[in-house]
Length: 413
Image (cartoon, rainbow, N blue to C red; front, side, top):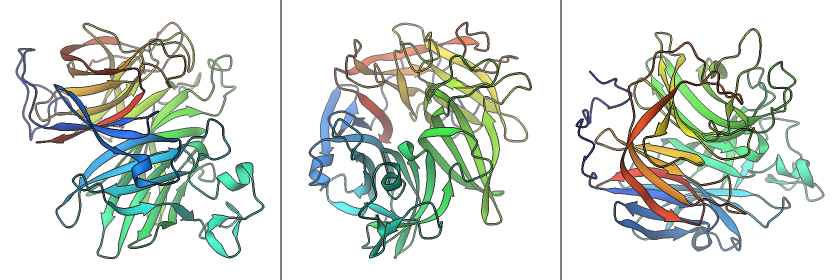
């Protein structure tokens, strides 16, 4: 019997024959450097909407995560995240919004944040708690706003407000925000950052998975990097690409870490090499291990599809890194589960388009059974802690382009 995390019970298992037809429906794709989102299927892509259409200030914006959800009114909504990108670091302020897929109308927008509940984090404008002080610059200004936010997930909605979780990547934090209807300034309710005793050295959160169960509220995060470490085994290599997956839960009114993956050893630190795109089908984790097959932290090329099951206590247990049985993943960045149990894997080619020798493209694959191994899944130059396995390619490459595709999410029919 196939494991639940490979083929969801609702959809059933896909056939053993690799020639499984493409399921009916569309995928939402973000084109990072063009600042736009696309629709895609087995035949190709077509434009959906550009950030400049939503935000007049977007002369040079980049497009991050696109999510799809059904709102409280029963209507489909695309939740899109974008950032200014002027070629430098002077203004990388981010915004997010809910967009009607048919009319492209912006239903709501998160443009700024109010950190008044966290004194000392930000020096706001005395006249407006949603803006940095006029004389602030650099980091003092950045922490008062969203900077290079990569992902926004709507987790609750009422007739008057929405609750959002935001991966505020360049500020190395994750925020829970309440956004009142008709307002574009979100009031920060929860701040997961270096001020939290469990946050440790996590940087560049890029993908969120919030859910509720009988035990309460949970949040799982993929973080691309961490502060350069002097821990034994990584001191000579670790940089902003030594990443982790982490799991959190709410206890009383505070959030505490349940697990980090890969877990730290008593002898040396363990990290993934530039992880992205955490996905969480029932019973496990799947993630884009963007540079698992590379020779350096955050450099080179070559990645895989990382997998973990969950043990009885809900902690991830490493279950292998899958390479393609044909073709090659240069920089996998996003994954989405299809109704037939197969996966779409988006390969960006490189971290960004500048000087990239490889195209962005997608592959539809069947993942292997989870491996049983004593290895931890952490990266090192000799791959001593990685158990290589193989994913069967069903379709691909798809959507090949010289642009940098960032994320993919399945809409269905």
